[in-house]
Length: 222
Image (cartoon, rainbow, N blue to C red; front, top):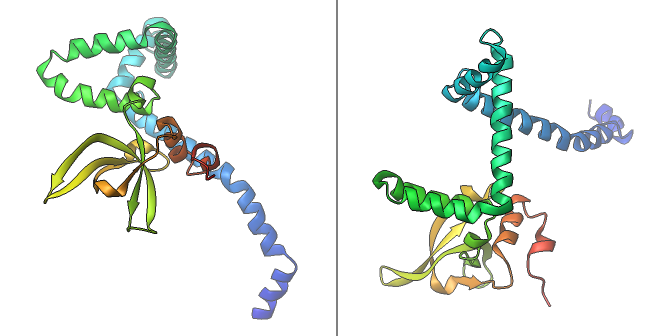
């Protein structure tokens, strides 16, 4: 049996199969990810959900209640078009104004103001809002002392806090491929290295790309 396997390997049959699999792997993963996204959206927004019922009701006003699936698709299309139109309008002229109006209105509501403001700031950061990104400096967090690992991160606050008599900085460590799924850590002040030549958008691109864009976004050595 070992000799048979060795002969098959020498004829490159197995290696060709492996090579072909690696070529198709990105396509297979892409299809699986798209399928997962579609299934998740159907579970959250499908015709059987509360929100999906609203979309179906909107479409039913056009084609009638008997064609439920078509009514849902029409309602979803109208909703997507409305979101696209709103996004286009906001990007073109009124994003900052609308943000200020929403912030001002919801800041007066006791329940909303404690949740809306921090959530809106985080969303705007990872949506690429220039105004919000400016306030998040990029740093390197050194773990393990000299010769240890440097982790690209955001400095959440320039203020140092006392933890058992030690000065600590609050740092946000993003994760790949979704930077927003990271976490906060309290890092010793001397372990935080500022990277003023790197912008926040570049750091987000780095994590989104699993580090593939490192040559484009990381500061180069002289």
